[in-house]
Image (cartoon, rainbow, N blue to C red; front, side, top):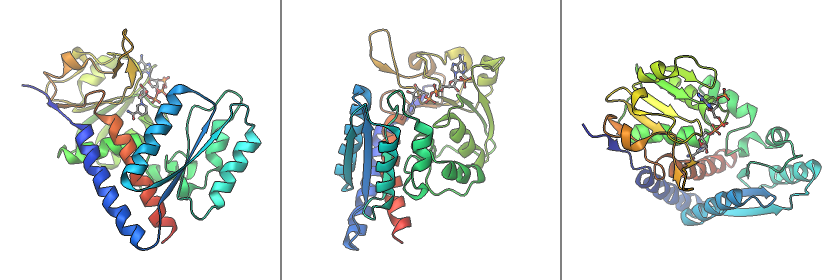
Length: 283
Ligand code: NAP
């Protein structure tokens, strides 16, 4: 049995086309969806992410505004910018690119964002909505994964789901969304005992660890669906995931590659969230 490669790039393209259509429609009503992207300092990875996000916005007709601040920016200055964007009626979404330079309190900045404009869905109000299961804005990566599963007609109901990683941006919300989809969910982390055995039980295994080839063939049940969130670097500096793809692919029923799996979905969901935020706030 060969694992079916889930083509996140193609599915993300479909999603973007849908967002582009909806953006045309909303513009006809005189509304221009817009995303404010804030970047502080000169981290090259952050710069690449911000450029990709701006490019994706342009492709679907969403206006993006960049606010690039020097790394010496104070907490107060950054908070004042967020407050200004909160008040700006033309801004639908606010995204503060992480990581922020040392000395800036990221949590305090996220708390400052108007939850209605919080397109990353990191604000405690949106996190609360996710917990309750009454979603408005969903965190982009887990939401993108749910979209991949839906697209591939992979049902979650009654399945054993194992999520490796418990970060606020991926692991925790991922587990919550799988649970709301009626999966039976186990969350693993660095203190988990018998990790291999637990993973081997999974019908749906999601790896969000940040370690190259962390998930080996021995950890995967034959026929499992394997979702690789990792964006790691191999010994040659090449982008790769958390899963040993070559070894796992032949035994999985479906698997996401890196690159071209979860990554493109994350950006597509950001565009979708911006559109949702625009529709919701402007009625
Ligand atoms: P993170 O905040 O560093 O969290 C990593 C998680 O993995 C933690 O919960 C940690 O456990 C757990 N972990 C670490 N070592 C482990 C071990 N030996 N056994 C079991 N669990 C272990 O990372 P993140 O932000 O969630 O990101 C995870 C990966 O996804 C990274 O590669 C990141 O680049 C990637 N990512 C990709 C996208 C995308 O769009 N494709 C988006 C976001 C992130 P503890 O909590 O116990 O420390």
